[in-house]
Image (cartoon, rainbow, N blue to C red; front, top):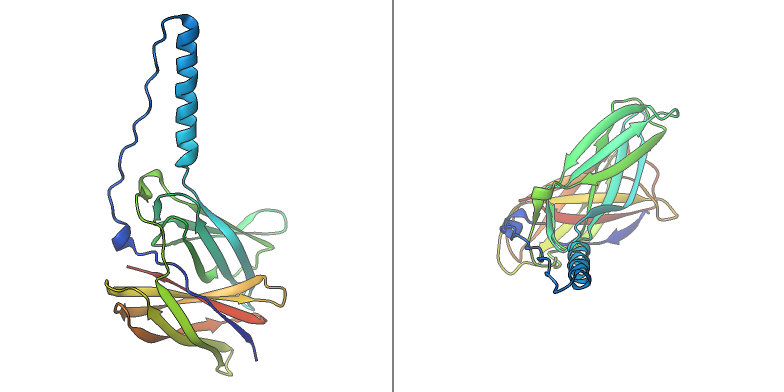
Length: 244
């Protein structure tokens, strides 16, 4: 029987992240009484600006990824993203690029996610490609400057339990279980549930995503994520993120 790892991600709810971006003020240069003093004042101002930029640097990175190709030449992938900034990243765009052995592009796909709060990790999994099996697959993520918003740090929002993998006998697998909202208030209209498949060494070899509708605060419901063209795997883990 396949091993199971149960994990819940942090909330990425766009509704709670929709706060106005406050403008940043830059320091002014200090006019010294002499040329030397003036130069010193400018140097300190420049260092202060550089420090401020470094302190407020915002970036979403791909911390883990993996993929496999099914019999039809399509890619099944799984990725884990992390927001390393101190602001919320709204609508990050994940790019999945397949290339042949010579480095030529054979497929290009993009997946827009809802959002990541400061310090949050989320997972996503899906299908990509054109039916031409790639030799390599590259993953990248981009967030536009206007999509960074002030927000509180992420907190646990979901608990995943009771997961099993049910093989249909027809080449598909239903990854099922229960999801509980840990929110005290704030019903969620939709929650994305992503399943990452791992091999014996722990590397991601693919994954699938599905959705749960109308998850009320503090409630529990079941989920079913359909896997097709499933590669060989040893364990799987389940992540959840708000999709509203």
